[in-house]
Image 1: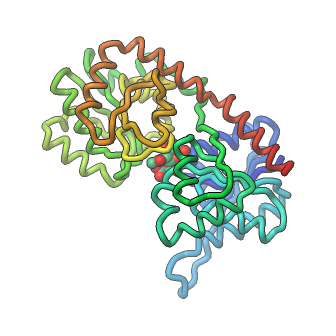
Image 2: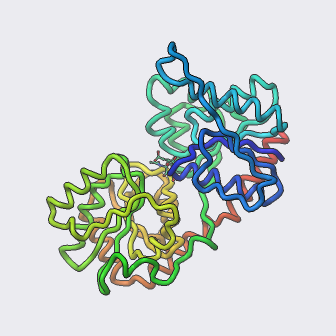
Length: 366
Ligand code: GMT
C-alpha cells in the first residue's frame, strides 16, 4: 500500500503519532509519503527506500494577504498522488489536513481518505463559527474517521452533528523505547530525597501551566521537591511569575524543548497534567510507560488513558486535590511505578498499529 501522511511536523502529539505510525507501516512493507513544509521531528527512517518526504513551498504574491498554505499543500499532495500512485491519504488533525485530502481526492479522482481527529481540531479550532461547516464537510466526506479516545469520538459527533461513524483508535507508545532508565538525569536536577515532579507540554493556556506551579508549591509545603518543566510556549512567563510569587522559583527547572524525553522522564516521580482539556494526553502515556504515574485533570480522554493504575485524576483546577494525590502516590512509589507501566501496556504500539492497518485495509476495500 502507498500511503500519504499529512500532519503537523513540529512538537505535538498528533505529529508524533502520525510519524510513528508512518514509520511502523513502512517497516511492515508500505510505501509512506510525508508531505509538508518541514520533515516531522521524529522522522528517522531506518529504511529510506520506503519513506519519503516531499517539501511544500508556498508561493507568495503581493495580492495575497497571507501565503495560501492550504492551496500549496493540496497542490503538492496532488502531484505526489499522481507521481507515486498513492492509494490512501491519512490526514492527522482535521484542520486543514482533512479538507486538503478530500480536495486532492476530488481533483485526482483517486485515493481514499482517512481522517484522524486529535483534539483541539475539534474542541478549539474546527468548531469556530467560520470553520465549522468546512470542517464538518471534510470529516463527513472522508472514507473513514477515527478519534484518539472515546471521549473525543463522542464530542466530535455531538459538536458537529456528524452523520458518519467515528471509530476510536487510541494513540500508542513504543514500550521498548519508552521505559525507565536507571536514575536518568535525576542527580542533575534534584538532591537525594527530593520528590521530582515533571510536566512536558507546549505551555499553551489549555495546559494550565500555572496550576502545575500551584500543585508543586502545595507539595513543597509538605516535603522537599523540585519541578522540571520541559517545553516552551506562551504561558512560560506566567508560570515563572507564579513560582516567584509563591516563593518556589528556585526549585523550578525550566529545561526548554527536549528532543529525547526518556532520560528526563526517568528522573521523575510524578507527572503533572492538569489541563483544561486533553483528548488523549500522549505525554501522560509516555510518562506512564517510563514508570511515572500521572496526576492530572479528570477531563476528555485522560480517564481512558490513566485508568485506575496510571495515576490519580481530579476536577480541572482543583490544585489542592492534585497536590494531595501527588503526596498519596509518593507514599508508595514502587507500586505506582509498576501499575502505571502495566496500564501503559494497553496502549502498546503493536496493538494500535494493527488496528490502523486493519482500518486501512477496510477503507481500501470500501
Ligand atoms: O492542540 C494541541 O494540544 C496539540 C495537539 C497535537 O497536535 O498534538 O494535541 C492533541 O492531540 C494529541 C495527540 O493525539 C493528544 O495527545 C492531546 O491530548 C491533544 N490535545 C488536546 O486535546 C488539548
